[in-house]
Amino acid sequence: MGQPDLDYTAPEVQATSSCSPLSDMFSLGLLICAVYNNGRSLIEANLSIAQYTNLIQSLEQTLRGFLDRIPYFLQEPLQGLLNMDSRRRPNAQNFSMVSFPV
Image 1 (cartoon, helix red, strand yellow):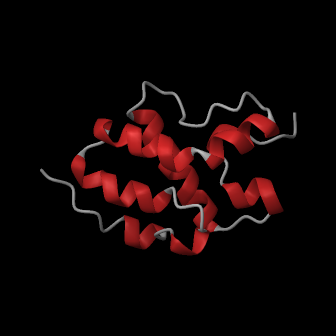
Image 2 (cartoon, one colour):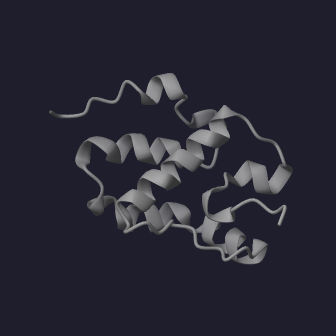
């Protein structure tokens, strides 16, 4: 009952129990993917840490195959949000500056 939902958890949270606002940005990236994937996360770990580890290691490849479902203006920002290195992720302010076509 106390385990977080691994399907939306940043890798540093699972690996080192360190959480920051940039961890939340990773989760936001996975949430955006779920919106364009019929509500399913790109990581479906079924509460299994071993399965999560395997899926997170192949996330970059999975994302490349998934990007064609994402609107073009979100593709690059989404890749930034799902960067394994939290220091390379955009913060909330930077992400809010993404231009959305009207």
